[in-house]
Image (cartoon, rainbow, N blue to C red; front, side):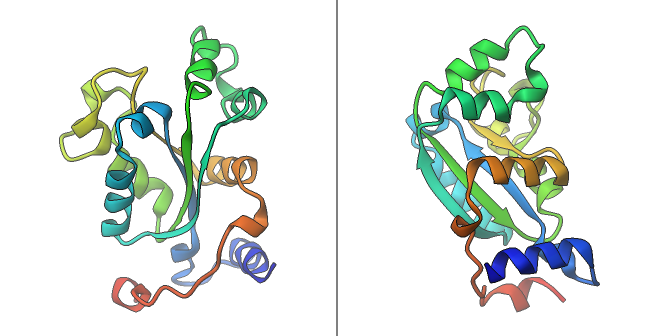
Length: 169
């Protein structure tokens, strides 16, 4: 509860340095789980300096996936995407850090692996757009919505990161 109140307070009254409390939703998709890339994804986010505040392995329901991808509902690939995302386990995560939404999109790489730079997750591990290993929130607003869809507030942990003073002013 305290963690939730701190997050709400930080969002209502941002102060200098409060960007370190920004959160994003990241999910290793079924192909990434099947290919045993979860550890690699975790390693890259941790090495960047982001703080893991929630993690779980889930078999996502069709209802959850339809809500998660609601903005794509009218696209011709929507049903195929929902089916694919429900085809196996997903590792759902919440990461926290300075400008984490934008920075995680850079770590992940372009949606189409053909456009993803080497050194990004998609650039290093993906060949086609329909099997692109990972999802990351595309905006702070999307992150808030997605985190609330995939995690209850009591699943988001507030913990003191002893490396924080080595990362932030």
